[in-house]
Amino acid sequence: MYEVAIGYVVGTVVGLILFRMAIRERIVTATLDMLIQEEYVKSWEDEDGVTQLYKWQEAVDEDTWRRLYERMEEMAGDSRLEELLDELEEQIENDKDDTP
Image 1 (tube, rainbow, N blue to C red):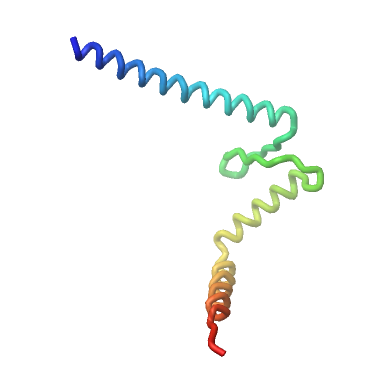
Image 2 (cartoon, one colour):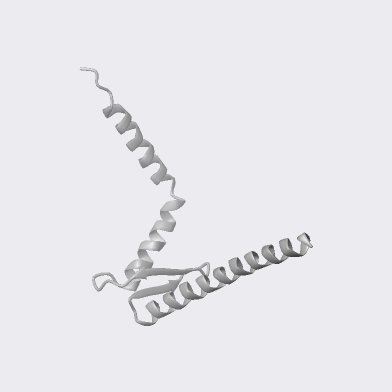
């Protein structure tokens, strides 16, 4: 008898959790679709097929965002960027020295 009651309670809780997750996902998807349709949020797909989102601002167009994103991807593999970061860290450490 207790097994049936426990199974009922656990099944109900799991059902509610799954229902809540499904509703939340639908709400988020519908909201994003509406924002994209109203052109408040712009989107484009990168070369990996991932949809990139950004807020619409008249001063910055889609091509500028795309070029910025591509440049950031290039810099991620650039060893010069790592060297510059190391130099900055060394400068910060040297500036912390309080000796007169």
